[in-house]
Image (cartoon, rainbow, N blue to C red; front, side, top):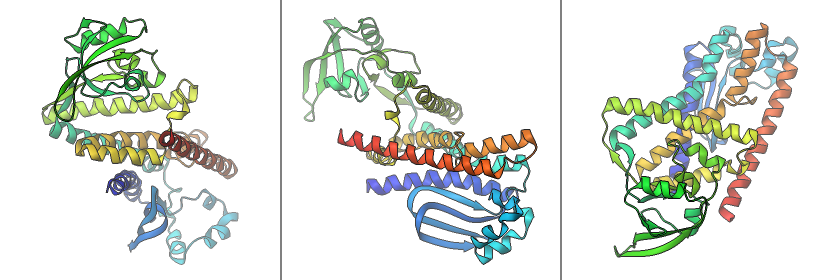
Amino acid sequence: MSFLVSILVLAILIFVHELGHFLFAKFNGVGVVEFSIGFGKKLFKKKIGETTYSIGMIPLGGYVRMIGDDPRMLHAENSKEILAEMTAEERVLLQDRSKWFLNKSWFSKMQIVLAGPGFNLLFAYFAAVFALYVYGASTPIDLPVIGATIPKHPAAEAGILAGDKVLSIDGKHLNTWQELAETIKTSGGKPLNFLIERQDEEKTVNTLTIKVTPQSDSPEMKLLDSSNEENSVVVGIVPDSENVAVSLGESCLMAVSQIYYISKITVLGFWGMVKGSISPKNIAGPIFILSEVAQSAKRGFEALLDFMIFLSVSLAILNLLPIPVLDGGHIVFFTIEALLGAPVSLKIQNYATQAGMVILLLLMLFAVGNDILRFVG
């Protein structure tokens, strides 16, 4: 069941992305030959008007195939080769050059390309508004209670769990999360003895002492530290929180901040990997993503919705990377075209597209390798 939920979530996000391209193509008078979610063998196919709508067996992407979107069409010497690759119906549609994607204005082409990532951001925003209005805004509780631990960080490695209440550190009694934060922040990295109060499954309250050795801030955790409280970075813990009801107006405003924050950490994460300050081992592939969706679903619809918001923003930004094949690559080509007053040469586009496909394939293989190592390790 969890696997089916994971597939459905990915399919929804891909559908939203491709719907953006599709609607803006139609709005700008571009003919659409096919609207497909997924790749491989077709599980469903239906033609309505000039467009064939289909669902592929592999739900790891999608595409909107538009009339006149092949750069080779602008060169007469390629006409026979292109026509040979088309069905009879596509050849008929091709006769109306006013519906060609490549014959549209620069502004129209940019709208169509940007609409995919734009729809993902809009979906994330409205989902965030819904989540905030229905479930409330998560607000940290100023008590020394652990809300969550960060995997592979000192607290988690030492055995501290979500829900644990920290009574004292090295004998110093704690009443608030701020006191807990200050104690860790000023520890100088020396080992600390946490006196923990923990409730087991039988509701029995036990106390135990756990030794935790703080570590230096990691680049990955710095991205997540929007509050600048270093304790969540140094030992890998975050405070417990409660949901506070907010109005629809407040939800709309808070959703903007939430989408901005997710966008910021995603962009900084990509940039950190480019600079080498963040390990590429953090790149996640489809196996990890499907697993996280399934885990979120088990925690309830609110957790699933939160992860969908994060994924939708990440998908938007990923597609805006300036790599040929992705939307960002098309934006680069069209921007150069606007500056030079002519399309980028077919030869350069072909080389760039091939290079982009190789880059994406290598990234996918690397990400899948990371996923396997995560589960094996």
